[in-house]
Image (cartoon, rainbow, N blue to C red; front, side):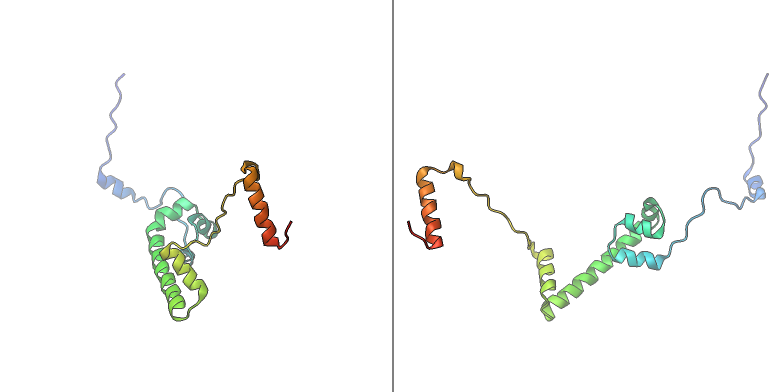
Length: 140
């Protein structure tokens, strides 16, 4: 038995059907002013997506370039405000933040490792004891 050939529809016939309904889920409307405000706060995309009640992939696919632009503009504004506060008004927090950002200043305390007493010789222990006694002001 030979199969019947089904003729393909021409473009004109497809247009005549005039399909206006879209398949799939409709796009969720997103408040762009809220999105801009959240992006300027430099929140993570996951956090922004949770607030807007959308999937993080949707946020990335539809708004990644715009979010990057908003965040870039806000970084410049923050640097301008910090510079103004630090240089003209001599605010300590602004000077510290500028130093951390541009000068590599770190506010970390580094512990200096000390040799354990077990590794010291008898002479070194005697010297250490004498130093400590002098520091305390007592003599033996």
